[in-house]
Image (cartoon, rainbow, N blue to C red; front, side, top):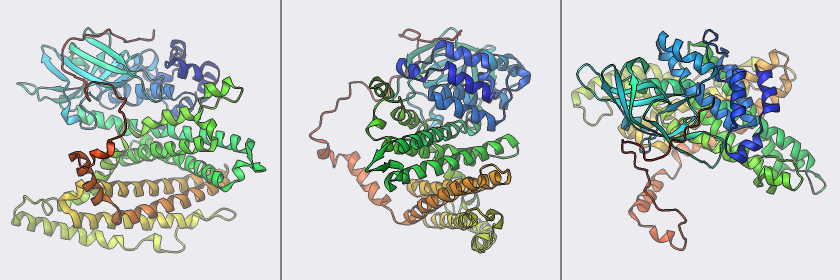
Length: 583
């Protein structure tokens, strides 16, 4: 399938046209349907290809490299659209009805975000009121990726509690052609110009109870579980972006000469190329490892998927930024302009724009920090919850202290010593004729223990206020991400060596990445306790209170008029339906 997909992308996808017209041509989408690309993750018994997560991600990296808009179309359809929640939570009847359509003909979308609801779904305003043998949906959904061309939607709506109805946030499959569904706007963005993303309004849309996924009130669990694995699609495409950045950096820096030698031979540029090469190797290691864990179905990959998404989106953006810098003025110039004056049409600036959204959607970097940090401190909260709760009585605190004392008496000693302290630990990562990776794994092991001790100390110091220390928690997570990537890179290098597949080169890349990552991790460890967090809070208070408003004088704001957040009051639409189904 990957060979067929590559041939299709090389011969039937005009990436420049997609960027120019800000739309994926109908014939391209139809070709993807014929290829079976809509059903990569759908079981063969429903007409899909039944790819593993590993190979699905390789397909997304390939498709996303020719056009990130195509990667987004395919990913939104089957990573978070109708196929994934039905696979996990749907009834057999729902799978039989919808999955064959999703595998070959119908495009799907996932609708959670609202104009005034982003990362806080508890404030969801779209309602699904029980009505006979179904529900009536009312509300507005924002940033509905694929929503403009979708045939089927997964919609999250709040069911009011009533007699016979548990209520709560609930998931539904909705046919876009249903009366009362209106795509009111096709949104335009800084990048991903071919993205079919819109605003969708529901006005008294009747949805049969048979289209409800899971029980009432299970919608949030379904959404979060779907996103766990769905998040892996983004770092997969980020790894693909890194590969492309490396290719362009290699070719350009060998051809471009300054002061009598190729720019790659100048240390200032060479360091950037080394960073791109090493980081691309590590990103592929991270996504392959997390994907294999997902395929095994025996692992809870919440943390790994979130780390992969966080790390992949941040590092890919840095790599693309470095590529633009390496290309200089040509990096800032559009591919169309380069071609018009007779040079190779390299879309480096487009890659930078297209990658920027990955730090925001499917969980922003800030939300990923908080989500992963919560997992990191959950054990402490469960053990010492009453002890650090200011509202608990002395008696409750005494019981909690006894419980916590027993836990930490066993846990803390284990943080003091381990294989990382032994100079000959991990000898299997020191084969003859290869760089020695064992010191890096010893560093990872020691640092993981240090990270746990730092987290414990912070819990002891701030107790119930720990959740407000987002700067500290973000650094804890970023250190964890570096350690995860280091271990994944080392394991991948050894795997490639054992297969006789570029072993020495893989070890060199892993060694370079680990040395770069250790510098970043050490800096983050230092910033755990030496930072400007307290001062930053004071400055923010001053900004909000207007203390520094004088600093804004001397400029003109070119922004237009209008509310900061659009009105999303339920009701009939006043706009033309811009839904564009692909036949």
